[in-house]
Length: 159
Image 1 (cartoon, one colour):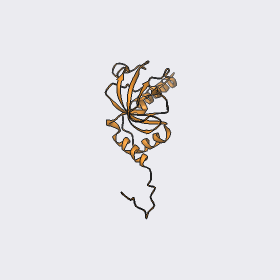
Image 2 (cartoon, rainbow, N blue to C red):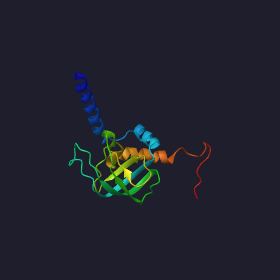
Image 3 (cartoon, rainbow, N blue to C red):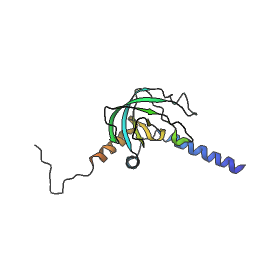
Image 4 (cartoon, rainbow, N blue to C red):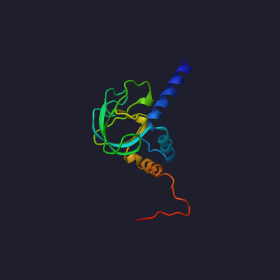
């Protein structure tokens, strides 16, 4: 019985830690790692949403939410700036890794997703507000610039 209780305590601690760090700004290293691993990396503006707020469902999985978003910037994936698409909750969730981010109308958020088709799934661990993502977006901009194609003795000719 004591092992079972210890196991439950460990699981509860892990779940709390996973939820509590989701709002923390990404480090440069985390941003680079996610950029390499994920298929879609976009900044969006939430136009409308039926997602319940985090305050309405603090301990429950919110089923059936959907949001319409406008792509503001794309670093990776098929979605271009100006495109309208949808974000939905997954049909099934068996743990903290698939909890949806409670998208609310008016928010600007950075989304990392494996999906490359509409609708996207905005998982809590892979979505952050634009305000919390300034450093991550600067890193993404640097990644898009890539290494210079000019050699050491070459210079860019301007017209």
